[in-house]
Length: 580
Image (tube, rainbow, N blue to C red):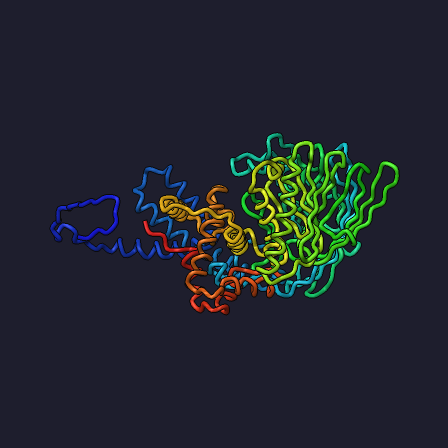
């Protein structure tokens, strides 16, 4: 036989057995036992019988007087007669409950038994939530005291008796172990958390509970399309680590720190946890009006434009106020002026890039190169996406030594290592610039469908690198090693379409999103030619600006751009049939 390419060859011979030895005999007891199994299988769908069945099995393990088959048959017959009555009653009780249920509960799973990329689940009826925050930062205690006034409209399509908010800093209330948290934990971590002190809904005290990073608030007949006003009083003890909201001796950086209303889409409320892998922060666009009081030694910046911010200094205290509309989150930084200075660069479209760095430890030349790299990236991607960046300032803040980079609309938090002598640090700025469009202007469900955003970011970044001469040729041997690594990851049940929870470590995630995700679009670009991939990407950005997009929406855009078999093509890459 022609075995084609193979690592080895094996041959096995088995002695053929006479067929007569395998003729099975049929008994009446076999028939009865089979029917009883069918009845038992039906009844096991109900909780009462499952409880009884477990008791019976445990009891049978301690009874030796009876032969096991006889004992099992007797128990099954007797339980069928009376457990079925309870199962019947339970079934109708559940039916009644389902009919009476008017609100949609929290969910993190799709309601349809399909892959998420097979249908669009995003909410097209969204109206921006309005947040008004009044904050005070206590420097000596690294504590933020605040109140948050929220005005929100019920766009779920049904009456709700609950509303949910993310409290992402609560992830660090207890020590976190495990290698996957190493990049967030930092060398000397200390805990941080948000204490919810009081909540009012429409000026009435409201019941609430906090479980992990989720705040659940009881609502009294929050009917469809009606508006509710919530007042949340809280204290935030900042953690010391490399997370999105932390501090060190020279700065305080705050991103994903305010209580943030969870997104409601066709899958219900999205209550996904904080993940050390990828970007799990799923949000809708919102309007922010924030005031913060802090010691006067700090330069206070936010992702709001300078024209929409004011600063007042009274003695040793500083008051900063800012407004920004149509963003997915609010970010703010407090920089000790004795440690920081800035480098600036103006893009062709007059977007001012400000890079804040620490001259005592960082290279000024690198800071200047980062400012120039970010500005030139803005020029490139405004043309690449056929979309003008809607804000005229981009602040790049040097945060902790090893903090993972985090991009907010109008602001990028980046690590100290991006201000070393490494000549490729400006590419990190380019990545942050790309995310001003992909994840900023256009959002996606980064926990369930990370490929929607990350593979497009990877394709955009590597296209830029290729045109700017950063891309080095890769050897055939290295290509084969990469493909072997991808095959290994997929055999372990980790696919391009997998949610963050399926990835075993950050390396497997990066390989799938950055390498395999890029390859998916690069090959598509080669197949359809005529720049159709870039054409589809431009359509995608412009059509979904200030909206969220799902995988289904991406595929639909590429179908319209001239690849009618796009669904089959994407599915083959997103979750292929893995052969042993």
